[in-house]
Amino acid sequence: MQLVILASGRGKRLNKITQRKPKCLIKVNGIPLICYFDKTFSLFKKKIIVVGYRSKKIRKFFEKDKSFRFIENSSYNKTSMVHSLYCAKKLINESLLISYADIIFDHKIAKNLIKTEKSAIVVNKNWLKLWKKRMSYKLILKDAESLEIKKNYLVSIGNKIKKIPKYQYMGLIKVSLRDFKIMMRFYENIKNTKIDFTQFIDLLVKNKKIKFKILKTSAFWTEIDSLKDLKITEKLIRETKNKLSFTT
Image 1: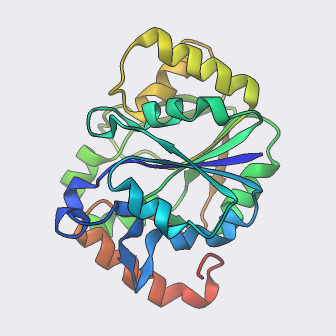
Image 2 (image 1 turned 90 degrees about the vertical axis):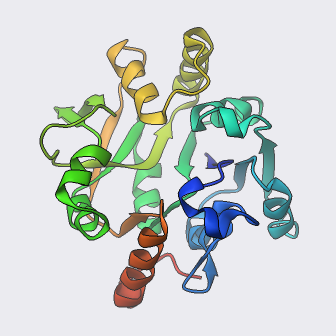
Image 3 (image 1 turned 180 degrees about the vertical axis):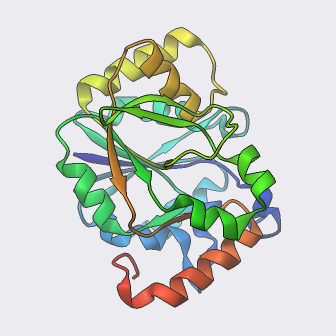
């Protein structure tokens, strides 16, 4: 199995920090964000990082580790993460685990995802507790996305919500090689290089291209979209550090 990290974006809401470095290299309690993937990296022999903004800095950061391969999304500033994944398609020759680069999670989540036989996405049970630290209830309704499940399979995802959903997508997904090829053909056909990742998954499901199994977890997970998120994440890590299995 291969690991693909989507790390091409700038992170505009963190502009004060990301003016000189890519988002995945910002410091979280003194440690580059990408280093919180170390134990997840150890699960894979083949690792691909899709880069774009300040890509030379990421390449230099990993220059001593020859297990990484880099793919450039040269149009990162006008395309989405789906296009970043598409840029890596020629290197994909087996099932893969896809991860956003701006999340921190217990690596046991990745271990459990690897064990699933089918294409699957991970959803978090405790997401609302985190969101309440990040924003008001009004903003939660604006920021969170719909997620509907039936018989442990995904029905719908990525739409606006009117009420709080039970789970939230975490930015982690496992895809079989067969399903990956289906995804890429579908992406070519829709001709929308700016489509959001969850909206893309939603289209795949609604058009009956792929069935995604749901993996539910309550293990540690957070994402960093703003300076406030960064401060909250640093505090959460300090409070729970001894219980976590991702730190370097």
